[in-house]
Amino acid sequence: MKGEIDLVGMFVQLFLSLIVPFALIIYGRKKGWLSWKAFGVGLLVFVLFSQVLEKVMHMLVIDPSGTSLKGISSVWAFVAYGALAAGVFEEIGRYVGFRFMLKNNRAYGDGLSFGLGHGGMEAVLIGAFSAVNMMVISHLVQTGQFEQIASSLPATQVEMLKTMLNQPDWMYVLGGIERTFAIAIHVALSLLVLYGVRKGQFRYVVYAILIHALIDVVPALYQVKVISNVWIVETILAFIAIASLVFIRRIAEKF
Image (cartoon, helix red, strand yellow):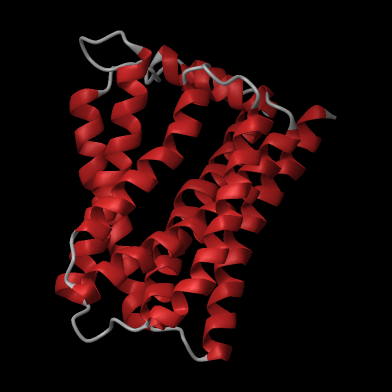
């Protein structure tokens, strides 16, 4: 019965991670602000800077355990690195996208579209793909095939998969909701960086890096068990997402 409940949670995460970006694309087209070029560049920037360049840096710096830096056991060093790495790579990526790839696409709608492409792709890769992956693993466990596959995987990865499988179904639902929060945050940060590019002032990119880093401190603290209550993390992210929506509306007049 537990496996069935968890599967429902995985489906909810998959649904939210796909339907929210898709619904926003439809809404953007209906309202007339969606720019496919800016959307595509936002998507490309996320993949290149976050999933390729940042991941290469992680391989060089982070210990295989995933909770400390190589040669440094300090939890705070890991948290600081994790927060700053995401901020630097993703916000510099946004700057490169707007500065060099979208020279003729710097309107308010372009900022919205870029952020939607960036956040939407993150929702698909992190939220949807993760849900599908866990569905496959769950099926392997239920059919008795998991142990055979697990024998070829690193012990730390096997433990992580078992932990994820044993978590309650509502954790998967939270994962899908968190992707929605992240989209709002990515759109807000994209508009902030775009505003800086339009003004010719790089300091706005620095602001975006620092804000991004501060936001990522929260999940990083949860990852290393400094914060043990997931509801604290999600509540903080919810307030940040609401603040992002307010910022998105208010900065429109600047464009």
